[in-house]
Image (cartoon, rainbow, N blue to C red; front, side):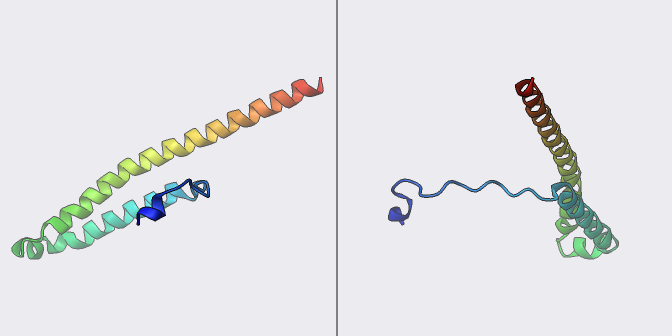
Length: 99
């Protein structure tokens, strides 16, 4: 195992994959909340068996998902804003070079 980690790296790390992050987090949050609602009528059954934490875990997942939605929407907006600024700077430099 030590031989695997010794020596210089042969390849650079790939760029992170960008995808529909907001949609993914929103879908996961909805799934957690639906699971909470499905389990809620059976709360007594879960509580009798000492498994009520299943219900509350789903609610916690939905709550954390709401924080995640807020975070990824802000991140997405910041990435788009940075890309627009970069494009505007490139156009300004191109315009200055042609004059």
